[in-house]
Image 1: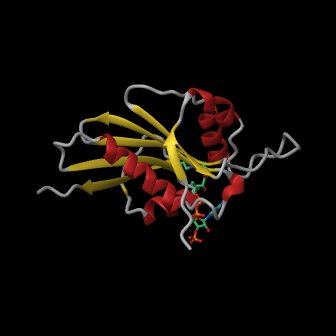
Image 2: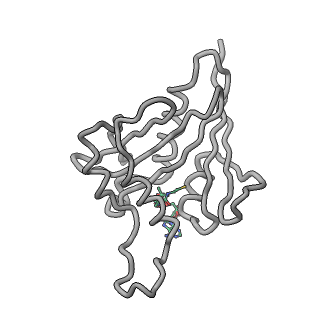
Image 3: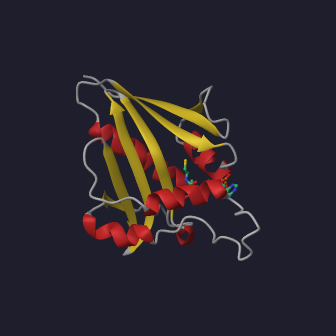
Length: 167
Ligand SMILES: CC(C)(COP(=O)(O)OP(=O)(O)OC[C@H]1O[C@@H](n2cnc3c(N)ncnc32)[C@H](O)[C@@H]1OP(=O)(O)O)[C@@H](O)C(=O)NCCC(=O)NCCS
């Protein structure tokens, strides 16, 4: 059985939902202990601060499993054929309902939908923390390949070129 999310654009009424969006485990009770996956915590904090509706070059889509917010996708239209994916995230308790690759596929569709009809291709980028193997696997499975050279050595840049059919 194929399980799909219902996607829609984030709106003002979703702010509270986003403020409590959880895509990683809680901080350890002992504040001296580091979070096991700080790169996920960073994405979670960033998503919680989103204030839809967003305008201009940014798109924020929410994926629902029934009434539950299961996933968040953010895509920026950088310029012309270039798009950047600053965040994809799946709600921690929605494993199974939302697959990481399906979420990345939605980010690609979102960029394609925003691309000018004149373009015969688009290029998408994403910066993935070196230790974020769950994310890396999802982007790789969606067709992204690793590029060289990021100023911040903790991150890798991943790229995908999408060709459009031209008649
Ligand atoms: C990135 C994310 C959307 C991927 O979604 P997901 O539901 O974990 O994806 P999947 O269940 O399809 O798992 C992808 C692969 O990573 C593996 N994986 C999942 N969590 C993992 C973890 N914590 N450490 C290592 N591997 C992990 C899975 O086993 C799977 O591998 P497999 O297909 O070989 O079994 C999700 O992990 C997430 O929301 N993370 C927090 C936010 C984040 O880091 N976003 C990415 C910013 S670039």
